[in-house]
Picture 1: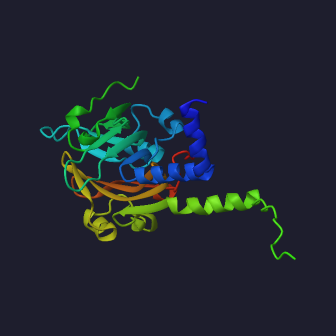
Picture 2: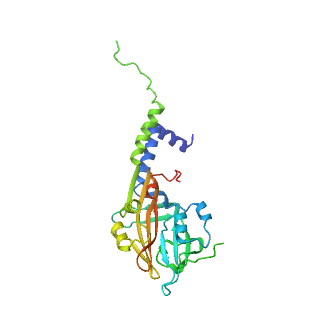
Picture 3: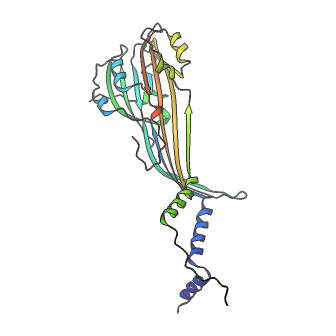
Length: 163
Length: 138
């Protein structure tokens, strides 16, 4: 009989099956202090109904667009130097899901370490409608915004043709 | 004469009892939380604000806006109430969290003389749900 098999048999004699499972459980419980696998799903708002978006055509007025889509999330003037310039209404929603892994060392004295890995996309989809100063819809499009730019930098929002 | 009890085979635990016990053990691992930002804009639901209403009257009814946006010589006031519901399940080293945020939004558009031209309302915060990440949301 090999020494490995002898050792296994000896361990089996002194430690029944339940003890092995308990040891595994205790090890996992101890790990909770220094490691975590997290799965997070974030939902913010919902996209406008496709049926409503299909009814959008340039020339509709603001009231008609509000009746179709409801209240926007953002309203922004397009240029500060010309008061007659139109404005932009944006409907914004966000859905993201991703894993993050965190491993850290909970040592009070001495060196401590923490490693975090996360997978998620940081693009915010939106539906943007551009109106002229007479509240007529000029164009609309779906576009992605950067979260840090929301409401702060309208120059980064590029309006394309509705087709 | 022997007083020793006869050896009896232990009775197996019923499966439903085991499942119930496991369920009870998992319960402390669940958590729920709700966050609200601002007060609900209930007045916008209850009061009729027709076009032509002065901005001062709109503010008296709806309160101070969260944001005022200039649109040329006109303006738009934003009112928003947000509700977030979080549900999570934590199992030893694995944690699953779902976060759902929806808002009630009111935009009041005013002309050059600060009279209401359009009132846009969306009340969606009631649709926020406690769900776990693997549960379907509509």
